[in-house]
Image (tube, rainbow, N blue to C red; front, side, top):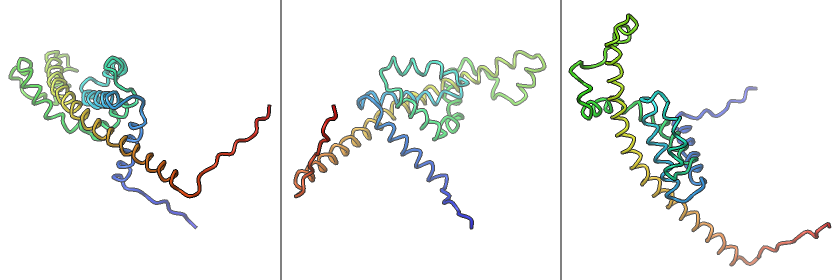
Length: 195
């Protein structure tokens, strides 16, 4: 006999991963401000990971500590940013916004062509500037998206964090009230010490 396991869909697994990360976020040390700040920084920094070739992780810990955020919450925010695929989705928009912010870098050369890499390997170093300037546009645009979405996520996480704490507190009060009014009260029996 073969026992078949229940296969869950990708959406169900994604939903469970989000719930798990939210529980980790609720149990992170610190108050609502500290947790929200950490999550916002982790989420915002995730958006510029691709454009900095993952070098942002070298300053991830110091940025979180200097801002007074919670490191576990920042890690959860970073993971949520990875799960949403926002850095990849927003990259074309970030390049456009970055070219508006840094117009001196887009000096009419236009779009970076695939042949720019081949020109670089042939010794044409002018293609290097074309590649780097295109990367600066993306970095500037993704920095704006990271700051904006990080600020928005701060308020969203703070709202849900405070709401979840209130619900948790209300449930505890309800359980205490039920225990106090129940006819059979719990009696604690202590073991005698064996000294």
